[in-house]
Length: 213
Figure 1: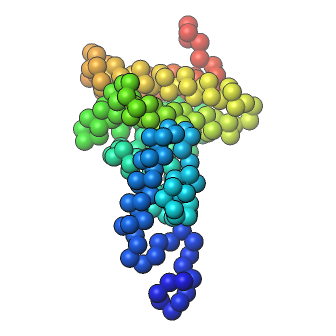
Figure 2 (figure 1 turned 90 degrees about the horizontal axis):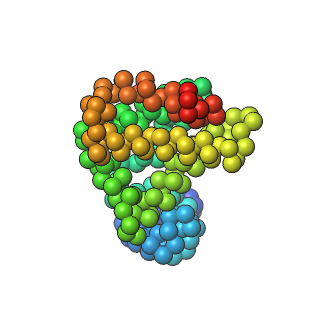
Figure 3 (figure 1 turned 45 degrees about the vertical axis):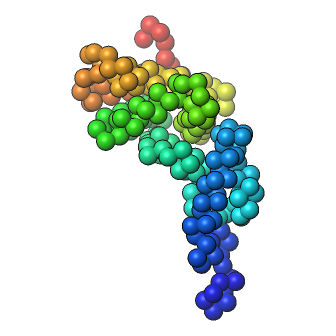
C-alpha cells in the first residue's frame, strides 16, 4: 500500500523515499552478478534476487539487462541502441540502414573517443574485456540474427552466420578507420564510406556474398 489514500502500489514501483536505496542495491547486485556469472549467464531475475527486490523494479529503473550493464560499467555509448535504431528497415535496405547508423555515430567527435576506448577494452584480456565482449555479442550479433530470422526462409543457424559475417566486416572497418587511423580509409568522407560498405553488408544479409563479387 502507498501513503496516499492507502492505495496499493503498482508492481515494480518503488516505495516513496526508497528510490535511491533500491536503485543502488540493484546496481551493486548487478555488478556482483556480472562479475560472478558473466554477461550471458547473468539474469534480471538473479540480480533482483540478489538485491532482494522484485524483478519488475529492476526493469522500472533500468529497462533491460543491457541498460543495467551499461550503468554498472559506466558505458556512455549504447551500441545496442545504435544498432536497434537501424533494425526497422526492410531487409533489402538493412545494409544501408546499419552502416549509416553505426558509422554516423562513430564519426561524431564527442562519441568517437568513447567508442574507440570500448573497442580497445573489448580486445583486451581482463575480466572487464570479457564482459564487454559478451555484451557486444549478445546485444549486437544476436539482435541482428533475430531480426534476420523474421524473414521467411532464413533458419536460426544461417541467420547467426550472416549476422556474424556482417558484424565482423563492420568491426574490421571500425578498427582500421577509427582505432588504427589507416589512410585513406581514416579520412574517407562518411557518405563515401557508407556507399562502399553498405552493399557488402547487404550481400551478407541476403546470403549472396561471394569473394569474387
